[in-house]
Length: 228
Image 1 (cartoon, rainbow, N blue to C red):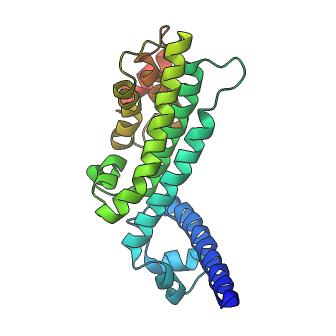
Image 2 (cartoon, rainbow, N blue to C red; image 1 turned 180 degrees about the horizontal axis):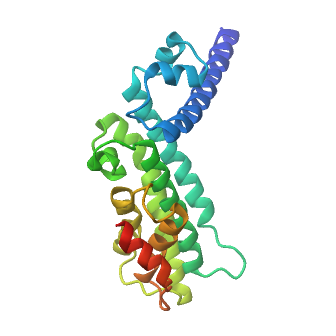
């Protein structure tokens, strides 16, 4: 009996590892081709699995998409937590800048994955909110982790004097708002390169709290106005 339990646990771990590898590969394919333009046949070929293996792990293309979203949010939460850790001579605003850069980069990567979808579908907040409740509950810990990391950087900035913060939670939502809107208005084929879009978005968010606001150079402002 003990041997059977051990074997079942081993198979379960192998299944979990295999699924994570498939999700990682699927994420790369969807970023490159977009969800709308990718068929199940193309996904199965890119994942190097047959249709039976694909359907063993995923009910359909939408199920793959939802599970990829969960995996992406989990990865983002981990990256944000690492970015928010204090380094020597760090100020709270330095930690916040790294955190916002991670969040904003994720938003642009997400946009590539859902290219061709309606604007409301490109909004990560809309998609997460529209998930079935059973799935939505699984995303909450990742969202809460990200929010708590942002709150912690704001608390640090408030304490060391590098930021003006009245209400930490409200300010956390405010500084994340520019990156959440970026996915709706940004055009990859526009004049503003992704790196500058991220820099501009993060600088805009930091203006909300910084005692000495970061200044955007004229070129960035001009390109941003032309692209929006």
